Image (cartoon, rainbow, N blue to C red):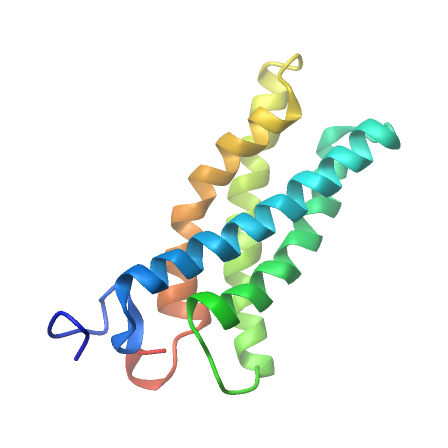
Length: 148
């Protein structure tokens, strides 16, 4: 049971978590990962003159590690130690979301090369965010019985 009634395995706020706190944890973790992604991208493109498409591969990787740790702690509030299987599930979801994110980013940059990389990053990140959450909720951090 959640704070406002029954929760099912398909509920967006798992394990009876307060939906607002859960949502804020997701936003905080995602924002933290986004800031890491954007900072690395900016550093590599502006300071080291690395092409944005190549630089994004590095920035996504750094952001993914931060996101995994943050989502475990703040979004899904897991108290058990991480397992290898959890990491593999997260990596599959994370790389699928990253592929969506990167594909959209690259398509924007190739279709309109004068686009500021940051704006392409925002657009691609918003699209990938929905896929990412659903994958985390129902696959990566799912425990037995469909709850976290």
